[in-house]
Image (cartoon, rainbow, N blue to C red; front, side, top):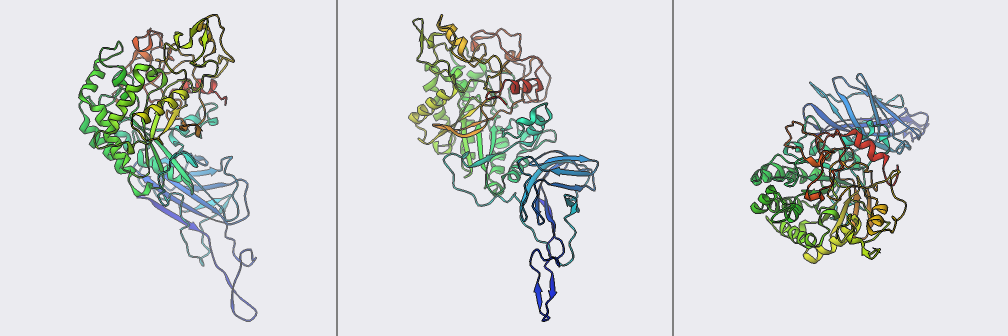
Length: 574
């Protein structure tokens, strides 16, 4: 339940005119008492040891090119991170200064910011606020406090749009933003929007005092203001999750489909269906790295695993995805995007069409229909280059097609954008709606820095041509864990190319893919040799070196060295 205090300094002064009648003093009359500002402070979400709050400040004095709001707490409240303001705290005293982009505050204008905090005991709302040293919450005694409203009002739900990213801001996760900003140079990207990962049941209410789903949605409302806002969620807790990997194994066993439905998807759907959030555009990325495994890592293939064979046989990947699509797709402002691997996984002829057919099977299972699918996402948490400009799949060198090179290895696609556009067409042919859109995760596929090729490779052979010109510098496209040399890719952007709804940073840069050595944990995450820099590979990466960075923490944990590398090798450069 939200709690608020509105401090409004409005007074209507009446003075006697020459004839004795009462006259209202107009604004600007020197006879009126100064009415400098009003403040609305609202606790949006409180979970007993922490909270999120939204603050709206209205300036009733001269226009400002910068501003500073201050208050003090009576209890133990501590601000841990904020958004839309630079917030510092000394003891109980808190100061919120403007960011570079919102310093202008016109007469009668308002500005909003928010933050997350911790506390013990009681969480009393502050009683006194100042704007640039002038007290805002001392009424002259003649005015009547009124609530000017807050930016958390969700507004009228809008009709579902074709592309939710067009004309909308995208939610900046304050927890990730704070970690990024704390890194040297990190403030250059700490305001970028990233995905919020719901990767276990506990994440719905928040893990270890962190923000839960409601806290994120409340923070998104605070960021939304009067415009449109997209919130990006990764729904990721299938039974027997990631059957071909160990670093990202989940908490649910292969047969726990009922627990997945009732303890994971149903609670998420309940929160997202709350009318409070009806004005948000909620994008859900459904179960990354799941369905493609049933195509490439089962049966008689050399890449098959017993775990993937089990998940194909029991059908719980298909059932789980179908159930999630049905429950979440029933919410009018939710936009479901199914994970569709990447070109270095499904781009081969024997994977391409069968994957589309499997996705259709899942999209029509457990009550779901194709109407519950708004689109697909590729390259989630992966490193495949967005566009390889120095060679195409149609090139030939020394009498051989590029497809015959060791790098391309008979794939039909050399980069992620061409794959995403072609796979979209395949999906429509398979039975999905003709207006589906694609997302491409560009968070770590920039491959910039000094090693980035500036032109095609030598035409001595097809391998020298491809290897000398390719941006993606992995040993093999099957390498996926904390890749050495990777960089930030294209910044998030709406409608960048035909059929592409957006470039997104669904994987928050700086969060590890998996530990480089075994680490005991209670998160259900195993040790995968693909995260070990000394590993010489397996059939899934053609027995190449893993290319992983050393000293990596568990998947999802902060990896400072990787974050610094990503900034250093960003393309476009920072």
